[in-house]
Length: 187
Image (cartoon, rainbow, N blue to C red; front, side):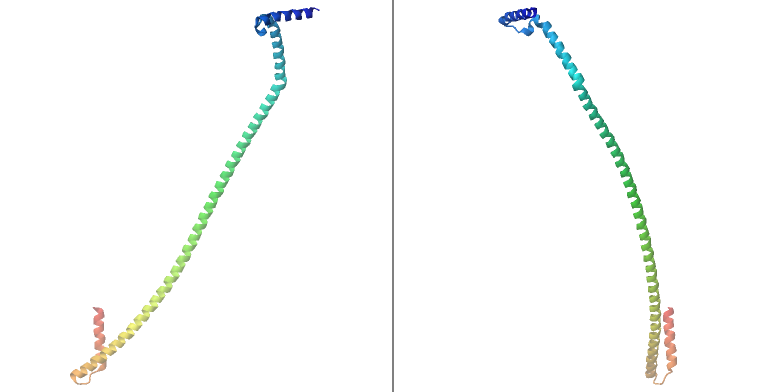
């Protein structure tokens, strides 16, 4: 019965305070009970957080950190692989450039040789044609000059015959025309 009396006393005491219009939380007579329940609630919440919530949070944080570390490591590996591939591509590109330059130089050399051979062949043909043409021109010139000399000698012979009134030596007129031409060429 003692607990019932204590409760009744507390209720009666609470009615006094209720009638006074104050809050029971601020009544110093309730402080030990409030501190007790505060300690129990704190211990229960501490245990709940310590054994249930915090391990899960730490596990999640650890998993997240492991994933971040794994992703960073994988990113570094991929970056190294990309750098290796870039270097390999640059080496291949440089090699291709070198080969292309070699091929171009080879083709230029071949083309220059062919051009020089063609030019030499053309020059040889042209020089032969020029020599042949000059020989024909000289031959024709000699022939024409001989014909001109003959015509000049005939004209001179006939002119001399008409002027002198006597027949003249055709051979002598021809040698005079030849001598005049040689003198003219020498001068």
